[in-house]
Length: 356
Image (cartoon, one colour):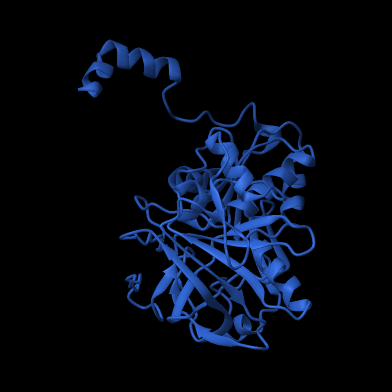
């Protein structure tokens, strides 16, 4: 049986069998099962690449096996049911510390069907089109050049960088299996995209709420490469305190924008309008520098990525909120009120016209 494995982007360094998938790992100490969406480049009939960000849960699990001098057992569900892929990729916002299979079952309202892999004993999604079992060898034993690959950042991740290898020991598939592809591209207005930083964004929201700060929403605005925080200002110190908390976290974003509740955080035009009319360039900006091992950072050089070490990561935090002391007398936004809009639609019977 031959499974066609395409080259998803014209400048990719090879064919990738793993894009729409769930990589399954089991923590050797605590026994919990982790699902992650890590790309797999086909090297030959028995090996694939294994690219995983160093700060991901999956990478931490694999390093535990390596520290014990063992290869890490791995199973992969290729073309699993959509809820499994979306949860593995972080797109459903699975909370930190919650096993992804459990969270996917919670969303579906029923347990996820699995089979126990004969080789690894790992739970494989029973409805996957294709599955593989194998092991990831320690990098001192074997690595191979991986990439480039077109990533969700809108750029090709550098190629030719040595990455660990997944040695395949077993392959399973349905009759006439379908290989599901989820290759990311540069974000644009009408594109479907899933956001890999979603879990980091969720953690940022949880952190802000635990600090008792009046945050209504944290939005990963993929199309602008920014994280937008919706603020309900209750005191003059709220915005400053939120900026201080952001200064300490590590989501993979270079820009954080604070806006008021009257701004749609998913509309780039509204966010830029808020910045252009409410931002004070003297007091409304903070430059933050932290350490990050994020390998897909477009600002990293090939040498820095190959080293897998943390590097200085600079972020910009922008206050696009109205000044607290001027909330009552700040100019009124030029738009129709909800009541006037409703009245106008009803007067001209537009709701009936729109329904045709």
